[in-house]
Length: 314
Image (cartoon, rainbow, N blue to C red):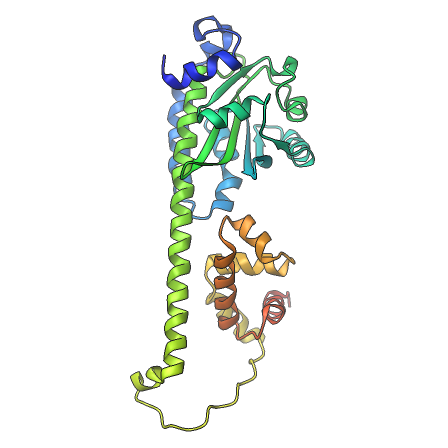
């Protein structure tokens, strides 16, 4: 028996794998192959907020019936996204229940021990177990479920929950271990996205620094044929955004800059934007500086006004 199974079987299962009845008889070969393909598709997602939205859908497509993805913030279990095959109403109910009742990850929650041991779990008969998250279990009413922690640089950042009730049975130990491997791959994808985002931010900051140095030393003018010395020109008023220039200006923004601008236009603060996009507050500020530069906006409010003018329907 693998160490990850022995670590979690005693506290959270009522029987050994050979004694667990129908749940251990579920054919998982196809599900394992499809889960591997789902993880491969998720590697193409470079934004962690989009990744969080797609995880439950991809896992359900791989053969799981109901999947919940949650974030861990300050040791609080916060439901992020959910998908149930053929039952959109249950997905909405899961999200509503989870967001209305955030839980601290502490004993006796099985997920608390799971995060501590860094191993996936299989929980049988949760409807009669007072240790579980009763609000979520009350919505789904599962006979058994599996869960796995997601770690980014050894820090727990998310939780995965799944089951697969079918005429053949439900999830078993092999599915639990499969979800654990998927969670490890997911953590690697999230790490990559964070690193790439930081690299882009560093590059943007470096470019802005070079521009500032050029403006102070006059090197920028010298490189382009030189400029005669004289008093600095007064600041020019930002040109109005017309119908003819709207699309060309919008085309200058990167995908991430458009995401930041959309959230800014929705009234989000820098902290809220950072949390939504899984980036630092400093990175948000860097994006905003580049957005204002590209839109010739004097401040955040002006940038939003110009954005709304650009996207206003004729």
